[in-house]
Image 1 (cartoon, rainbow, N blue to C red):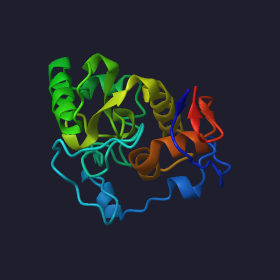
Image 2 (spheres, helix red, strand yellow):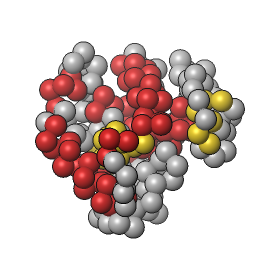
Image 3 (tube, rainbow, N blue to C red):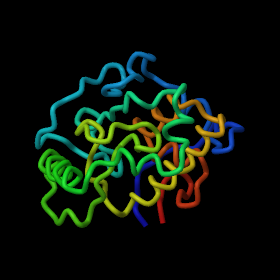
Image 4 (tube, rainbow, N blue to C red):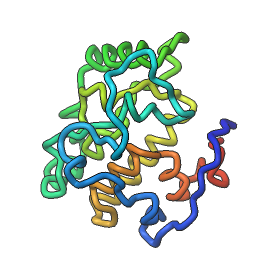
Length: 196
């Protein structure tokens, strides 16, 4: 089991995911939820350097705040993220993903094998994340990558069904995907603290 730290799943709402307003309520202005970096107010985006520090399964918000694909908006989701296979049309080639993985590894001071990590888009492509922006990319340990993928799938389903607004899903995954995962009561979360 991987200890993640204490994350409460309290105040879960009645939406299909169980993600309540406290988890999904954007703490940023609508202007920050347009194309470009999604940076919580009061946090300045940094150019990645070796000073980046992961916070357990969460990236450093100063180095990896997330960024959005301008083609994905609430008005375009039925032509973009809600179309099966959409992400295959925008996913960067392996050579670009590998380049981003190396840049992120340098920024975060990763010294072990990159095969222990998934090159992850913090805001998933299936939620309108930017495909080739280093502000939206980091090397996520495999120990938690499958759980995050599970949350991304659930949030995409909820966005496309109209149960969760796109901006709220993007905010939840960009700021605390572990808290959103546990609030959604997905199976790998145990008491809001552990993944198994």
